[in-house]
Image (cartoon, rainbow, N blue to C red; front, side, top):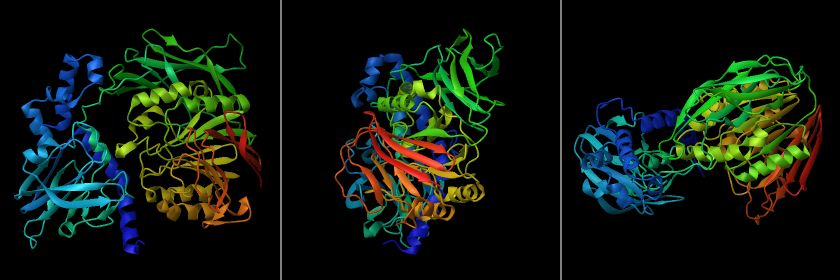
Length: 608
């Protein structure tokens, strides 16, 4: 059991997680060192190596790269940069530097032996991994360490540092990447910022109390060259595609529209008009903002242009026609339509999915939902929209799968751990969706937000960021709302068999109890369930006394065999992908879990 100091220590670390992520990622990926700025960087070296490869190898050869082929393109100077400029800091006294390397990593980082590190008999462990300990003595001054490897291995090495003289007072400074967090090497300490619950369970006595330098697993990608090149099955062209509707402002009077083109299309516009106007009525036109998205490793579509436009001053409960297009050839899409939210609290329906993982199944679920419930106003996806959030081809697959829904109905997305995988951030997610910027102040805009549709409030939270940094904002939203129905949407479930998230239960569930949130919608565990109404973690007699927690899954999964907890009212053991549909009519709510065969697997009616 954790002591109170352990819990406070863990929460203190979590408070710093998101800002640390952002600073660390920027430093890692941009390699903008605050000191030694003129020195060669791993990023610059990677650019030169990739350019040599692309000039010499075909696309097929790039896709089949192995390590011997990669080594042909790495010069002696490149090798030196890879060995010394990846992770740096300075020490004021002579030290022993310990590198903890995952014992299952096939590729031994070349620089360890070349730099004079020796493998010891020491072992460090957490619940998932065993680490070898490699050590080297350094004098006072700079310590330079090398890359994790040319092959991506997610379990990145981490470091601890101790003085050679136990009486010396050790100070570390001049970190690259900048803003390195320094912790104490001990059992219970986390080593990955993107997985703070994974803590050390075995630490040798000789290392205890030393200075621990944690990292993020995503750094394993910084020097990846083997199997780094990829292709998208849906490359861009001059013709606009990937139309996605969202809301960044009021659902009653605005609509945000996103789409993609190839890089030769320099600008884009949206033309729109109310559907009930005369055929000869003039189209209104608004210019979109353009963003260039670039990925040199995506060899058949390295650059695309992504456009975003927000239509404002629309009329509530009105259907509009619209098309998008751009210069120089002004190729336009065929007119599609959307309908703004009603001005009054009219009945509405929405669909709830989770863990779509850029699968074609999500498109089938949305098509089925739209056919069976054509009144559907929007869809929310509570995280893990794609498998790897930094791979643009995953988003290409997702948008192709949901194209017949997303160009007519808005999507209300939620960040999941796969969308910001391995601590690398949610840059593509944030680039591809225009969302409300009214969320928690200590988070990046659009990672959390609130949205009201009809008489329902939807609070979107980001569990890959600091829970505590969103708690005050969450309470402020709940305290002032006058909505009849309240929904909280986030990825990790507070209550689920086999998955515990005590930080969420500790910080957010008391607020759900205090302000009577009706539903918490989550995912992550790849099965579908509905709890009884819960208050303070206990089952209560009716929904007006507690919160209902729901999970769903948009992918096929194996059948469940574990026992059903007492707090669960419905557990779908089939492993079938489902969508959850909610219909709200004033003080009456009906929710159903539906599969692709048209079967209703669960149903609940609530009257307030």
